Image 1 (tube, rainbow, N blue to C red):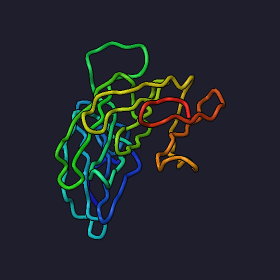
Image 2: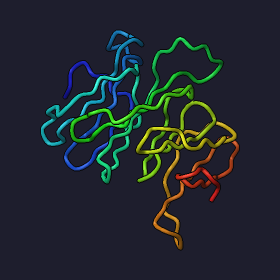
Image 3: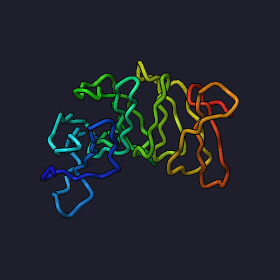
Image 4: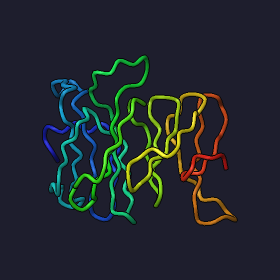
Length: 190
């Protein structure tokens, strides 16, 4: 629908809007340009018409997550940085208004390419290239916890916990072969 966009991850949707993460790297169809400011594009699902576009400081965006309660889209990815690190790389996660793309906050780290994002009413949880899961306060964008996963984590899933409050747990496996459950608010083991 959008000529010239390099979609580099699964889009997210809510209602009649599709949120498409893009990139400036990864395909022979476009000139590779890590200095490109990749946009997140909101499209009307029925018509493909662009509703809004937010240009980011990232050269690749991945894994948008839409929280309908707060009407916020969370998306992250890799960006250029002058900081030298052994593994990982600079990433930035954005909290954007799902209505118009207005930036609510950004979160920067050296965790590398964002692999998975989920948001609840209090916390945004992410996994990236580094062997950690982390929780960010959904209102301020400040990190509130960090959990060493023990090894590489591809993604995670929120699971409802029966017999407790309606609060979910974040379930993830890693290359260690163990299933882990953590509280998304404080990162403690469940």
